[in-house]
Length: 429
Ligand SMILES: Cc1cc2nc3c(=O)[nH]c(=O)nc-3n(C[C@H](O)[C@H](O)[C@H](O)COP(=O)(O)OP(=O)(O)OC[C@H]3O[C@@H](n4cnc5c(N)ncnc54)[C@H](O)[C@@H]3O)c2cc1C
Image (cartoon, rainbow, N blue to C red; front, side):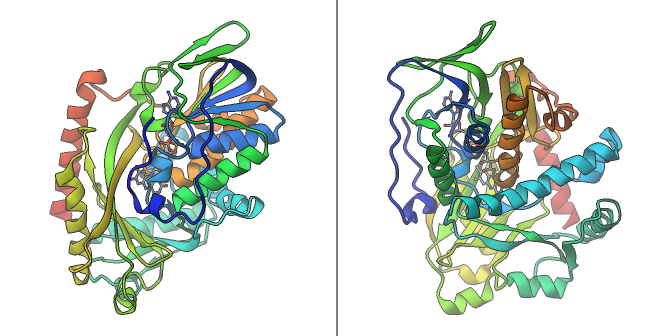
């Protein structure tokens, strides 16, 4: 079993960690969930509320994957732009997906309240334009939100307003989602696990699902020490999905993204960086995203590795990226550096659906999973409960293709595409 990485998140927990047992015998249930991140925990909570007997298996620790390591940024995002989706799938599908992404943002607040989860939640999610053309895109996007989607809790910030909100002169303007915000992701995930436990979900850590086989009336999930016989299975392994993939693995590509946390900033510095306390991300393909923690550290993310091997050099570069945005933090070295797998799909829309009659899955949140994983869990749980597709159908309308190049060559191809995209950002800046 792998332990949590040495991140700011694990070090700043204000509670004891619960150590869940590992599965030591065979058992049966209505739903066996594989993966103990946001998606698995959300599915567990909703299925249990629907009256199902639920077993959740996590190969390491709860929220050991992306859910315990991410930037904590919450926004109603779906992909590289909802308007692009309309051209392909029509307005009805886009409107439904947009409403689901708003529900996803609200669901975080509902769960914080319902289960009394303390996770440092703050409001405001700001995207900042790194060139003039991106600002024009924002204006166009806002028109679409307001006139077509009837969504008004968003506005453009001028260059001066962004400098005031962020403390950096380098941006051309911004796009503020007032309902968005940020959380301490590990505190939130552990709060969801507490909630699942009170709802009688059986959680097992240090329990890897090594084989799943679908029989006529059930699915068998094999682990090192026992077999779980389940009426249904939900694969919630995201970028960590390996051999138990049921044919869906090539639709997502794992990439490594890095984050750092400085020491708490002194009051003078605090006033100069992110005075608004929003979370911020920029419009570059290889983006920077950042926010202040509850104890006023700069939590800064950016820098992608496609090789899936941890790169100390790349990790250190995240600090340099921070200094480019905030040169006045030159004496604030990273106290913590960590990385994690982000699962992306080709079109950057999450891939949620049914792999077969009894096997459900949700993955590929493409860097937007803090909120969307919550709704993914609800949609899967409701579909299993009612034995009808329901809202799952909306997600299944979005067709996901395998990454070109198959298992051996998808990585080099993605590197080429990403390099081209990054060059476009450099030339437009
Ligand atoms: C560095 C970083 C920054 C990010 N920043 C943001 C952000 O600011 N905002 C945002 O919206 N999104 C962000 N994301 C993405 C977001 O974290 C993910 O979309 C989300 O956490 C996915 O949750 P999940 O439960 O699907 O997957 P995960 O949290 O990765 O959980 C999958 C779990 O499945 C387990 N597992 C895998 N295989 C097995 C098996 N065979 N048996 C048992 N268990 C298994 C793994 O151990 C893992 O714990 C970021 C991701 C990273 C890595």
